Image 1 (cartoon, one colour):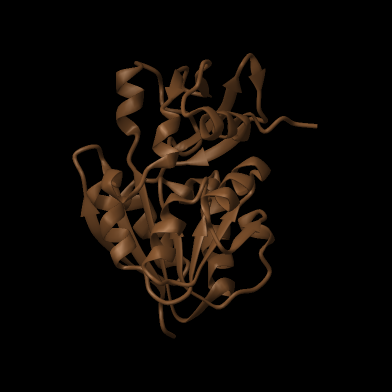
Image 2: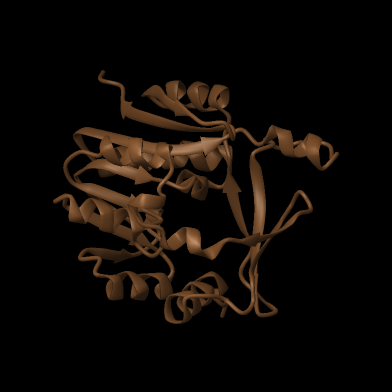
Length: 234
């Protein structure tokens, strides 16, 4: 059975307020990064401008996809929104419950069979769970099944082409934003997983092909951008 080392690190931080051992993230472009675990426990005073804009645009019944320990769900809940916090990590779901998140769904996004959500929210590059370009197409098609008639997607992503220059490595034959990651905590490794970072041009192309209207709402100084999308009316 694969260990949820991400969840174990979250739990230790939740209980102790600090980590004696870092949560490490290994990547297919050769980097090993120490994850700042406190970022998952932020409150609204620590949200960046991009996230504040996204949260202000939430409407109606919200599905917070990849909710982590519930920072965004709790913020929306406090504002009076009906919000479902979707998270696959059992440990993270337990922490959300202890923090007061009211509606928690422990599941994989692609396993949700139906919904009538007005907003699908994927913050902290949550849309990366698509993993690949083909996965993004599947995510967009699946999202249409979960949205109400006035439904919208809100998410952020980034152009990571600079990484290949920074690390002086050749771009792969597949799309350069398709990255393979693996968490390590206390010498234990989690299951490797695919994650997608998509540049604006490629996103707009795919979205139009899949029948979505795209608005780029905000760009920061770190090549991150915020997107609002809705299904194109036939």
